[in-house]
Amino acid sequence: MFRNIAALTPGTKFDPENVERHFCLDDMSYECSTHIEGACLHGNSEVDSVYSDHGTYPLVKTSAINEYATMPAMRKIKIKIQSMRPVEVKNDSGVTVHDVLKALVNFFSTGSHRDNMGDYTGWTGFDRQLLDKNGVLVLLSDYFDS
Image 1 (cartoon, rainbow, N blue to C red):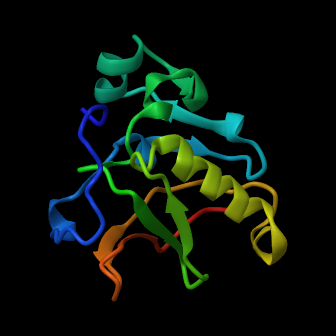
Image 2: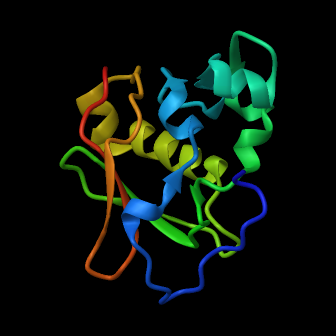
């Protein structure tokens, strides 16, 4: 699980291919760009077995919201949406799903992003991940639906 693995210390070398993203970052429905409450998990076998018994769940009402976004946990990650400038997400205890969601809400609801993308954005998850030149994990999303 993504709950009790200590965050990597700065400078620790790792292979981005061996970093696992929390499944909810790719399985959530995120249709409203200005509210965290708009993010939901779609029911599937993994979600149902861990968080409830069926249906769609507001992400903020699941234990997933407080779990680490990656395994192993990272103290800093970057989120890059299409060709836009990356957003840095930091948490000295390890970046959580909540931290990533707050960064996405901020990204989609401020400045020209909202003008370019509209009020409603259908999140499709991250497509890949890599390390930047400073050794920071970057989660890349090449597509979203607006």
